[in-house]
Length: 89
Length: 192
Image (cartoon, rainbow over all chains, first blue to last red; front, side):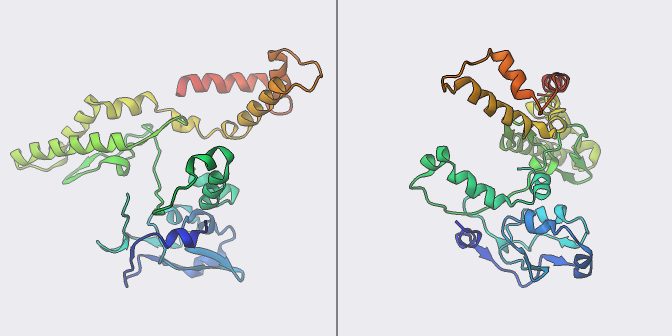
């Protein structure tokens, strides 16, 4: 089962306010791209020599913020009622 | 899975989960099952080496947010501590409300309750476990040795087998010294 198929099972209330912001100038210095391996939702994908990011499938685990050794990720919880809405816990 | 392990080995937790589901033993157990949701949580397993921040003026911290999680390699628990700390927090708030005082001094009652109950006692017993579990040999050398030994013990292809202790020494060759094995066993005894 692919990650996108799994994510399709989930209920999301996408907020217009972005809860993760990336300082891309720091990403240019980054060699390890640890976010790509840390994220269980494939929000970070290595493509054409750099990492592209989207916050839509975010499961709000916070792994990327800890994994990023560049301090490039600013992470806050989405507003109440928004983001991933777990139905089963 | 430890986040550090995922990053170091450059594997994705989602891929590992799929591999796990394909394992012959697991495959039978989940056959006909249906995925209903996909979730991910990061759990802080820090142990009691540093007492977590439990109470400040106007704030009580419970469950895994306070690091009240127990991982010994054999078990990974937290729901029980979350419930117990939630009850202790509620009792503390009731007390603080009676006094009309929500300062750290009053809310310190929460820590007393956790100390009296099983939460901090259990974490105290296993306080060395997180550091012990950082030993990479637990995840590489020892499982390899166990499989190697099992092969040598149970496989019968007609060649003469060796005694069990000799088999152990053979499996250790190139992997680990007797001294290192004893040192790890001693640390396991103290930590788990």
